[in-house]
Length: 80
Image (cartoon, rainbow, N blue to C red; front, side, top):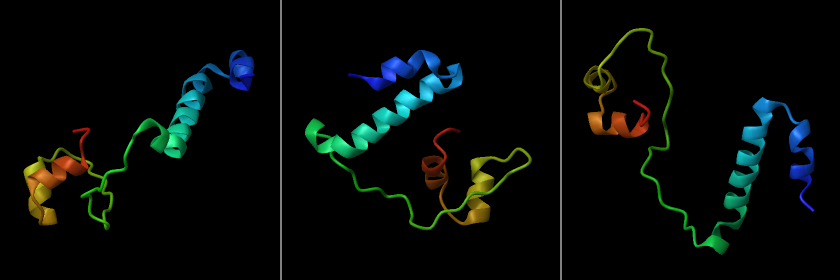
C-alpha cells in the first residue's frame, strides 16, 4: 500500500512536488547499487566558499581576484 498516494491530495500544492522528489532522491542514494549507478570521484576542491556579488562582474574579473582559472569558476557555477 502506498501511503504517499493516500496523502497526496491532502498535501499543500507547494509540497506535492518536493515530497516525491525528496523520496526519489533518498531512494537513489540508498539503492544506487541495485540500479547500476556508480559514485564518481569529484574534482571539486575540498575548500570552497560562497561570496555575494552586488553588481555585474565577468568571470574573468572574478578569476583574477580569486587567482583561479575561468574554467574552474565556470565549473563551480554551472547555473551561469
